[in-house]
Amino acid sequence: MYLTRRKPALYLREDSRSGLFLGILPRKCSIFKLFLVCLFLGFPSMLWLQLSCTGGVQREGLEDVSPQKSCPQTPKATHEDLSWGPHRLAVLVPFRERFEELLSFVPHMHQYLSQKKIRHHIFVINQVDHFRFNRASLINVGFLESGNDTDYIAMHDVDLLPLNPELDYGFPEKGPFHVASPELHPLYHYKTYVGGILLLTKQHYEMCNGMSNRFWGWGREDDEFYRRIKGAGLQLLRPKGISTGYQTFRHIHDPAWRKRDQKRVAAQKQEQFKVDHEGGLHNVQYRVDSRSEITIGGAPCTVLNVMLECDLDKTPWCVLS
Image (cartoon, rainbow, N blue to C red; front, side, top):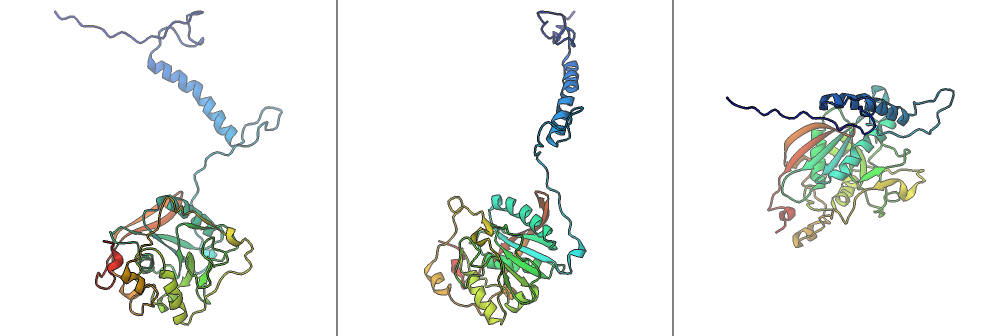
């Protein structure tokens, strides 16, 4: 004969004043019954919190006694409308390891352009190889991969957010349009500056043969592109009547947290101010490792993971020894 030991049942301790707990529960109460009671008591409280948060609670015979509280809300994706116009913008964002900035950029730009009724699609061109960052080549790749449903591009830094709704992101039919002009950009104010945010029709970008592929590391590629614009006989246009000055944009780059690759080897220093008459859009070497359609904060975008290639004989500074 085997003796079996029964497990002791779980009991709530008896209240000192009565045989009931809160006047509701009996002395012996299982965890399941306790859960049901907590659910019964907690649901009205949760409902009250939700209604009070939206300002929907009113007392009988009284106006709403408390001001409305702002509840966290998930941004709703705005779908573009064909009535916004015949043109569609490809926002090309050269990118590498700046995820905090990307989380701010994509929802902000999607909402900003939608409010302006600009048909658009955001392309994040993410460099995943082991070479130094090449902004110009990534823009060339974005141009080639953006498809035929867009007819103009924005070369757009991920750390520069437009704040003034009067900025023009429309189709730049008359020539390249520099949205982040020197008198508005918070950092760069020289006359030949064309970086930050630049709009071009796809036809005009092809006339320039895109951007040079030989600028590895940070800087100088936009200065060379300014010469390409002039060499193609195109007129560079900039905003007029914007009164917000250096407060027109929000610059979210933190140089203390993310330092730029500004190193220059000797050969690179000799080449950086020359105009590249050979390289550009037609000979950028790359491979798309993957392509993903994602949403960030309710805003859609396409992420292209790109492997660039480097000719070590022509641009040995794509790697640093």
